[in-house]
Image (cartoon, rainbow, N blue to C red; front, side, top):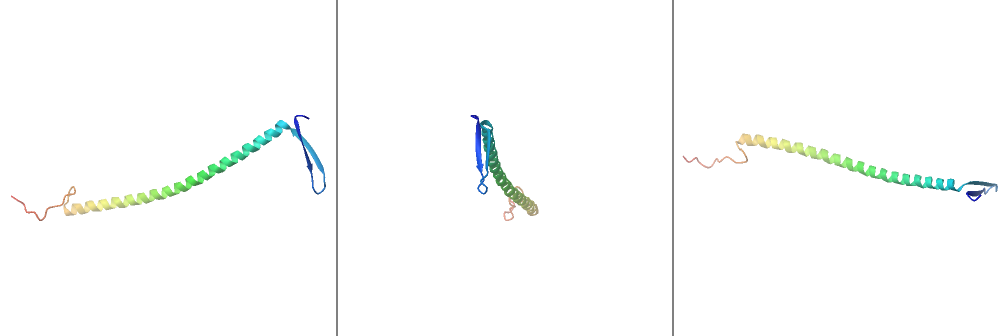
Length: 105
């Protein structure tokens, strides 16, 4: 009986006593399994929280990327219009035509 733990359960309504005993090593094994289960659940909950945070960040970054893509398209369109205006005005390489200066020659 040295290596066994004895438990006594008494019901409050009927007063029935139930007695059982288990091996001490098995009891410690059950306690360790319970601790591992609790730790695993806590770590799983923590990782699930991290996953939710990362998915929210991903959604925000995808929205920002879409916004930047829209801005890039608008800038490309403006550059095309600017090039067309430069071509129409005869401006090359950012220099303006000299309309007021007479040719010397």
